[in-house]
Amino acid sequence: MATSAPALHDPDAPRVLSEAVGRIAAFWQLSNAQAGAIIGVSGPTMSRLRAGQYRLEPGSKPFELAQHLLRLFRSVDSWLGQDDGSARSWLATPNLDLGERPLDLIATVRGLLRTSDYVDALRARI
Image (cartoon, rainbow, N blue to C red; front, top):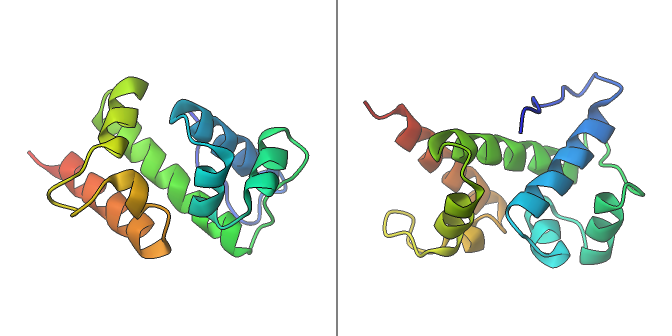
């Protein structure tokens, strides 16, 4: 996925980020409830977002969390060589370093940030 993180001042940011979140949810096969929990919206709101009937608003918590989700997606995508199956497997498998499944962790702000930092650290290894 070649979407760059949209800037707050970009008038297309709500559309771009909302579409990116919908694509991430599809690639990772997340339910509306799972994806909504990650970015802080309800399952029905996530359903509307995926259908293009709702857009994330710059400056809102869901917008910020969606930016972090996009960061995590891009890091995992880069780390695993754009293998969506491997990414889904990694998310669903208990991780000894993190102490639980990444999919369970990213449903909280702290877990999302911690998981992103973890993947970034893995990518930085030489």
